Image (cartoon, rainbow, N blue to C red; front, side):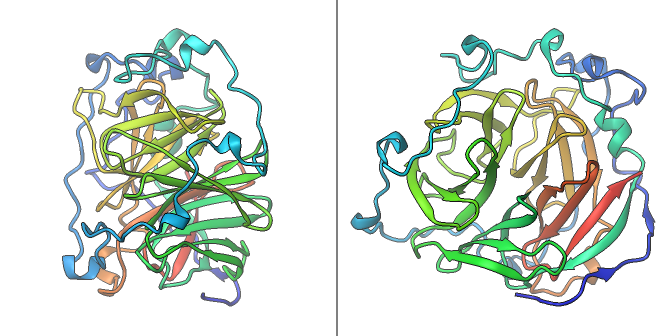
Length: 361
């Protein structure tokens, strides 16, 4: 991993390009922004950014699977593990957290949505400034990024190369690293504050891992399912005390925090009703109460109201490390984290040499 001093970057303001569009009424309050009525606002999906040469993508989503080692087959019920650390059951009315109809989440009633400190359109709509950069291992195929306990946690992918790491926040130095078995392709990573654990999903094996956040000791494994039966991104959503999971589709899946079982889904769509798929790495944003999602193969991040699925803002990060300045070895933008400073964000990419600390203006 890259090690060294923190590199300062001039405070250059990056304004969003004309193709990046936001909710049309930035002065609207949160409840108005979170409407599911497509006629309530107009937004157009930006044109797709150029993609890297497929040969440089390092088989990010290979079709061939490794054979399963029977000795490593995970247990179905994590509660059966002696090392399981129980957390509190989800708060709120259980009827709002589970439904036989998994196509929508029953809490998508604007009258009961949480109030954000600021709308996503206002918060993300005026460009950004790079505060500094943190060295990042350029061999790291970043799949998940999350900050907690004063350190940065990273989940990396690719078969035979997947890891979970604790990183020093200012230098990017690796403090602890754990390798996944060769059969697993690591994906998203979430921090669960109620028992100080990390939850990692894998791509094709329908298997997740729970780690102690201090030692990275593997506490137990669990089986999961999604619409595509794949794991891409995961984040903890404190509003409903659930995990939110993506699988590369246009769906966000809500999971019970104890059993890792689905309790509901919501379809992600633009305010005009068009859906958006390829949702990848996820991160809860406490400033707007939205969930931020990378869009696979694009240098855009979308801010989503997770209880309605409506996209609140489209964040153009194409100027963070411009495509035409990247070597062939570098892959796409992927990796989002907040920090302990409200309104401060970390962004990186697969095999990028830096993590960018960013504030929006």
